[in-house]
Length: 255
Image 1 (cartoon, rainbow, N blue to C red):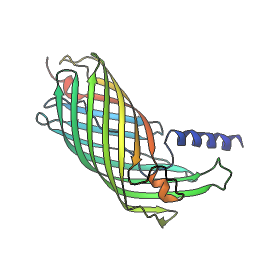
Image 2 (image 1 turned 90 degrees about the vertical axis):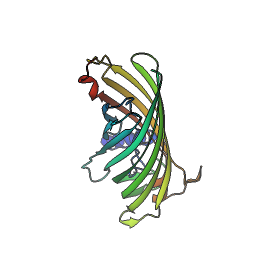
Image 3 (image 1 turned 30 degrees about the vertical axis):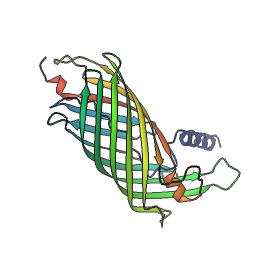
Image 4 (image 1 turned 90 degrees about the horizontal axis):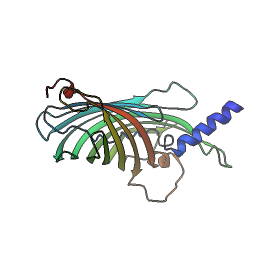
């Protein structure tokens, strides 16, 4: 009894933080690379509060050109209630430093994902809970713009905005098709970075990042609360991440 109560409490907290519900769509955090010059290589890793992991690599072969690849996922071996999936994305973009403190950029790309989720909704209401077992495969096209401002030698603040078009190639609930073919999602993110370490180039090669973001389906009317699996797929989500970034090139460049 106590274990069930604890499980329900964790589920409620997860839902409040946006970590449950629309689990078959996994918004990736905005990239917002710190790359700002030709030849720079940046490796990143992120940890979501629902235990999902994400890794990325950003590279600038020539000045103002950015190449990106990223992916991640979450494995969950539970049977009664679970959230698991994997995804990747690739992108091309550009960046423009404005002096030594401001960095602006934009990128666009393509990705694919597979997500699965099994859970009950409405456990805490005076109604019979609804069982969902969602399985989705989808392609996505996205565009992102970002900006970072350095407040000092070690701390930076940033904003990023991504718009993502999701095209489902497979979407079922309890084995039955769900009538959502696509969705367009608005995905802003705010982040704080703190850099540390030293390198031959004089730059700080490592940064830690805290980010918080949201994902809202633009093709769902505001305030509409239709029941059913379609609503579960289209509902908004929020996320919180902790991450690390490593400027690999700074470790081998002479000052």
